[in-house]
Length: 116
Image (tube, rainbow, N blue to C red; front, top):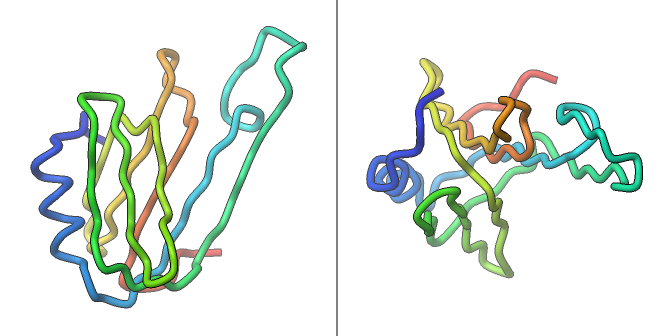
């Protein structure tokens, strides 16, 4: 993965407007992040292969970033994004990592379903 280039990510989000895509979105502090403070509760959210067709995609901030997808009836967004990658299957992979490299958040878009 590469450090987010806001203009490049914005171009990729804009290129996908109106397409039927598969969304993977996850966030968590438990499975991927090491927490030394047991008082901090484990939190997580995970969705995979939900079909979306968004009207507008935006990336904002100065780093870490927020990416949002405007759907016909609302928004999906991920905050705390630091890295991105466009793979050989035209999947846009956005992720947020902590200082130790642990995954904290991911927002990914694909023209085909993600492996289950």
